[in-house]
Image 1 (tube, helix red, strand yellow):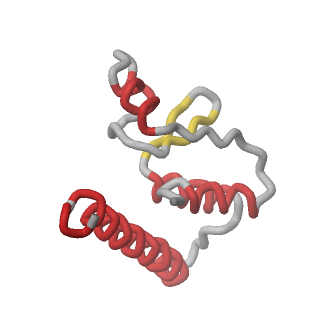
Image 2 (cartoon, rainbow, N blue to C red; image 1 turned 90 degrees about the horizontal axis):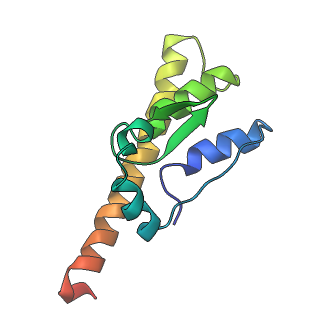
Image 3 (cartoon, helix red, strand yellow; image 1 turned 135 degrees about the vertical axis):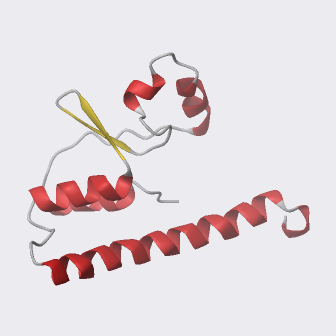
Length: 112
């Protein structure tokens, strides 16, 4: 399943920007959370994060907007901004609905 980082990957790929795509599995993530410097890299205790020049950026949609602005995908006009943001948030709503359904099927014995 693609997660919250996928729109960021898509933007970077479409813009032709080389990047290191680091994916962390569940067990590694649990170990990372135990590290004393965990919050230095994961400000809100979640992924994805973007690391650039030693600085870490959190929150997937904020990262997406920042990169979108940098690479010419995010407009200056307020109404155009609204359109882009409404599309981003529609994707967010769909992803949340998917996770809710997936969670029910994985945790509710009646749906297993």
